[in-house]
Amino acid sequence: MSPLPMRSCRRLPAAAALLALALAAMPAIAANLVVSPTTLEFSAADLAAAKRAQALYLTNTGSLPVRVQVRARHWEQDDGREELEDTRDLAVSPAVIDIPAGERQLVRVLVPEAARLEPGSEQAYRLLIDELPDDRPTPTDHKGLKFRLAYSLPVFVNTPADAATQLEVRWSNGRLRVDNEGKSRVRLSDLVWRNPDGSRVSLVPGLLGYVLAGDEMEWALPSPPSVVAGGQLLAILGQNGDEQVVPLAVAD
Image 1 (cartoon, rainbow, N blue to C red):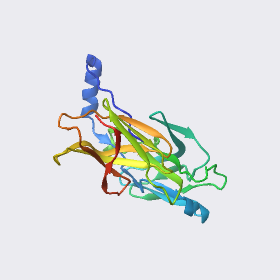
Image 2: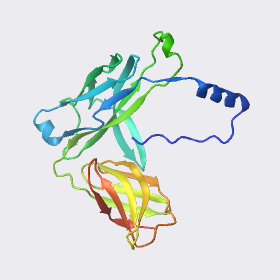
Image 3: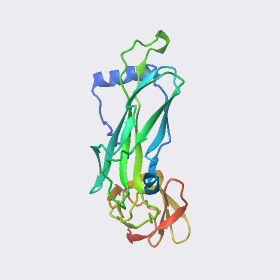
């Protein structure tokens, strides 16, 4: 899931400004939680072979113990918006974990046999991994402001073997709209505009986002002044794919 946008504050009241300065001066404590892998996929072939469980590893690389909760949510996209709903189609065990400093915990992610999966189409979920508040006393040498960590990992279930990419892409009036008519998700990253003279203009370095099977997403993407009409939109589709031309139905 894309991160929520942060709103800038133009003016702070004096008391709030003093509080912000005080917090900035305090040492920060965070249990360094490493999650691996960062994406899970259960293919249709896996489910047919009764391979319904996968491993997720949570590693606490910090110097304090951490308590973590893992929750599964069904992931949908509606008119360019991300939506998460409760689900029983994905299970995690254990759901709440205490991880000592420097240790690793295994979490099993399971697709139950009773999961309501639509045949021939990939379903999408997210694992919400949140550090829980800890009321245990903090050691004297670890006093300070503690941040709680949160992750959101994509999980794809029932991915068909013939998941060909079928996209309709429109870029107009500062908006990029992508319709995914295929049977599995598309991951877009590293968007570049290649002008007719071969010069390249970076539009989105890194991950733009996902478009789920049969859904559509839209992002604000104004044209930089160096974008010249008649060029091509390039992007990396997939986790480890190659850069390729993205056909545009409409372009600025």
